[in-house]
Length: 561
Image 1 (cartoon, rainbow, N blue to C red):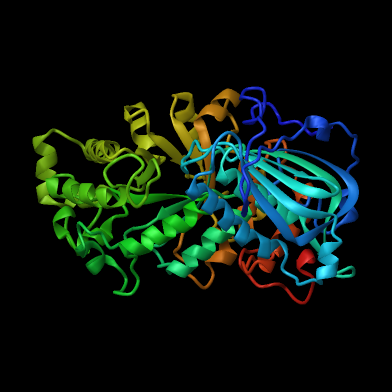
Image 2: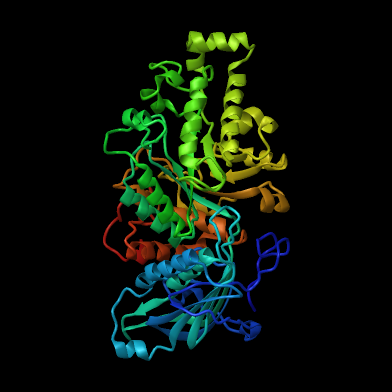
């Protein structure tokens, strides 16, 4: 029988039942497509997990529920693709998103040329994609559910509520299809397949740090492409920090003119537009982080008036309105000043708030006098800045994410819309914030920090964001988590092999049912997924390395190293 969703999963008892939903494609046809539940009736047997070096099921991350048989199916690489909708036409943007997704996925699925005769004799010649909801915008609440039906012959059927579910279905399909070098044909083992899938958490991120090392635009595209293969759906863009300010702000151009590493290591507005649209078209949200009031020293090069002094630059100066004027203008450049608008159209913005050391405030006669006049401590000033900067973001239609120090210092004094991101080793900040009714993100240092090269994928795989949290509270308030790729020792030369394949362990923890936490069972699939990444041009390091991103120890198979 179909393996059921566990209790607490979006498709489990505490959520609405999974409805058959729609999808997308290349040859436009709007005839309704009806899937029948007779697909669930036969008692298919599952092949042994040791029958293939790919592991079983040969998909990463593990789907929510699936049913399969024991037949080897052949598939034509010349699939005739049809887009269907239920009840209304597919909007042009949705149609383009899906047709582009198909155009990207088919070469990944069918990388080897075969004869026309072999293709013509394949048992499956068609792909039908059906989309129910049109005009879906990419935000936290956007559905990513899909169903995938691969029969023994005729037509593969994908249904999803929107174009983003279709993208995930295509990724799953692309992993199931394998090339048989002996028969020179494309096959799917263990058919027929019926997969019913949805993520456990809606927010599944990787942090990309472009302040410690600048990441060129082309490299940002490669990172985004790689995320889609593991269903990571958020790029947390740590855009600026103490070391550099690479964004060309139209309102305050001196920030990058003086704060970037060089005139050439900057992002124009058009660059950011291109990167964000590239991500959106692949189902990846971009959430920008402007860390304040600490980690902001690079702003002082162009605007010294917002800092305590040029010799002691951060935290930013709370005693002058100039600080908040610069931040308000910068935020407006990023958000467009309203919900759903701007370069970063996501409803969330990350404002940091971590590692605020008040020594520069105490060393400044002006700030010390300002604090004394108001009978404020440095901690009061810290809260004042956090609250005032959050007010600016709220006025521009954004919910605010902050690192856990703002919770540790101020707790329930924070606005209730605040999302607390846990990162300190051994912390229980997420657990405490959720108990108080706040939302949280889990990315604990020493466990999910990708720059820690000695942390193994097994450690990352077994970490559980909702330890100590009631199931209902976890479902409602733990929005997700992610791997944090801090950039002190990673640039374009090594960032991808530092991210991969360990981020895959995090992706499965955030996508798949909580009960899947056996590293032994996951190992063959992890090894195979690393090989899949390599085959797609992503330099994922061997998962058996003692330290991440190091070279293979010697000659050998990708599946064994």
